[in-house]
Amino acid sequence: MDLKNQIAVVTGGSRGLGLGLVEALVERGARVTVVARTARDLDRVSSRLGVATIAADVTDRAEAGRILSALRPTILALNAGATPEMAPLVEQSWEAFSTTWDTDVKAGLYWLQAALTTPLPPGSRVLVGSSGAAVNGSPMSGGYAGAKRMLWTLANYANGVSSENRLGIRFQTVVPLQMIGGTGVGQAGALAYSARAGVTPEQFLSRFGAPMPPRQFGEHVVTLLSDPQFEGGRAFGLKGDSGISVLEGEAA
Image (cartoon, rainbow, N blue to C red; front, top):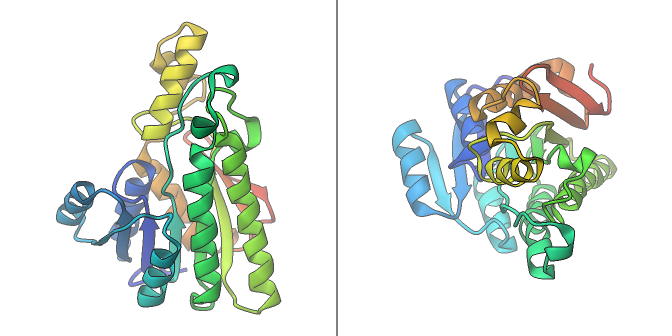
């Protein structure tokens, strides 16, 4: 996919990994709209990168449909999500445990439904943000690992609907295989797990190998979008030291 002048929508694109992706898309000439909740963060990214912005609650089903119907993007990146409360299982309340289900999974369901029912143009790519916790678990983050695995599963369900209805939309899951310091979820995890291990957050993060800052994450994702060998895969792992790996499906 040639990214120049492609219409892209990135949820949660005003900070962290989403912002790294927005920067990489803008550099390649995509026409980006960032959807996020906080107007101040949106103002900053708009001023710096010249992107369009929409302040919205990503868990609002009507907003998802309205935005996709109005913009009809060929690239949709679902990156928005809540930071889980970090605590051992025995200390988790249901409200804390289910935070990422009520935000990440709820938003994922509504935006995937909207992508299918609008529908997006044939050949569109929908990238669903997951986590290495979906593979390895994350015992300090309540329902986070299960929520991220559910998003992966929902992307596969959406591929089935697209195929059955001959929509030509591809849904692919993006799985960072390491904690990323300086982001909301990554920093929360690093602080909690390093404290449990009796090391500094920096020492804990070093266990994942080379870091993958948000901008490098963005570069990996635009490679997924632009390199034909990644058109057919269903899930991809991303790491700072080894780059992109196919977790599900086959590369061309």
